[in-house]
Length: 230
Image (cartoon, one colour):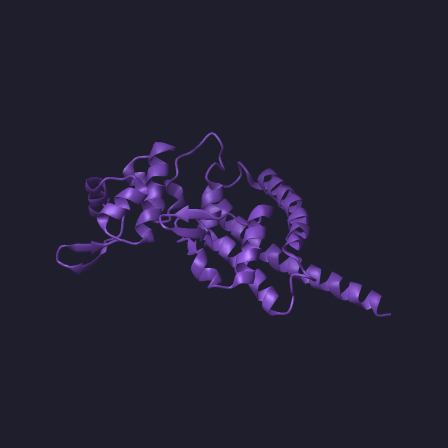
């Protein structure tokens, strides 16, 4: 995209954008010719992050630069010692605000069944769909959910036997579990370790417990199948 579109999509003026590039808060654009600069969605997401940190947290640019470089110690102390844990953890898990969203049309690639499933998932609250300029996009995490459900369809789980509404089963089971896990995490670590270490520890916990849940589910499924085939 050109500068005028970047201004339109972010609400940031060109002089400010050029200043951010000079100060290292934004990457250099691609230059197809001497006077032709091309910007990407990376610039859009980065500018929105800068605006949020300036307008909501009132942070100076030197602190924002350190945050954008991934330095968790750059965050100032807050009344809530884990006040920025969510974005730090999301970034470590690869699903943070600076991750580029996924074009939904490209993701479902003309698959009518996938398009219908996406509509149903959206109504259930399993994913969030939004407009990004002239595109309809989802986050990288939601794109993963859509792709996994599409894989399930391709494995032979047709809508008549396995409707999207079945996702509610997983949502109803996992949301209270997540609520309990987060409460225990905060009770165990809040005030004892800083946010950087907390994000590192939380990432390890998420990844290990995800594998543990998969192993337990496999065990229970095998037990159920065995019971039905006695």
